Image 1: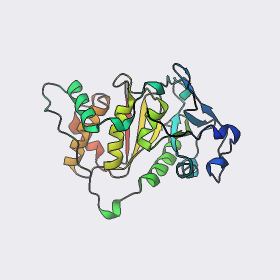
Image 2: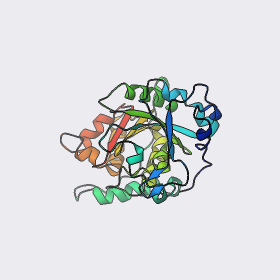
Image 3: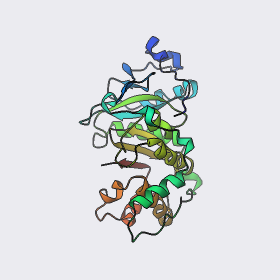
Length: 269
């Protein structure tokens, strides 16, 4: 995977984060280079040692501008522990920009759809929200992160992390996350879809667990047609969301949950 210069080693000399342009010191944390194949040649991420608190996400936002480090919450409260136990495989990931979201989803659709399903319908159009409903994606991401750290039903033990990545959609590939392995081994292909959702829906990657992904959504669908088109994309991206996440296992019922919904969650069995 193509990479940017990694500023994380600077935190070894200055754990406070001042070197990254942060006005508020970072909490106690650690640099993580652990992968399923041994130590990576440079840190993959920085992760706090203490649970995240409201305001933590917003406090590290300057690191995006000054150092190209993006915030994400990592849930370390599951049976698989934290990212140092997550079987990260950065060397196995390609570059998200080398993949086309429509082609990726079409391939998944063909693999998961039944004989009763139509052909892949293609990517849906970006919603057109009312002007008063427009939300800055990064502001919403910070608000969503604050809500998640206060809701143990969503995240058991969230920790603030910083990842060197070009854009939020690239975070899973940048750290070599293997949560969707049963669906796709090269998570960069899924990140290509996340990039498309960034462009069309204003998503941000807010949280990762061992096999769980949470996105904030600045411009969710507002009509049934938009929601139905998006449900097809979600089905190809993560079939378990429909098969195991709805009472009747249908895209129609799932689509109704997407209307004006500012948070999307995905889980791969």
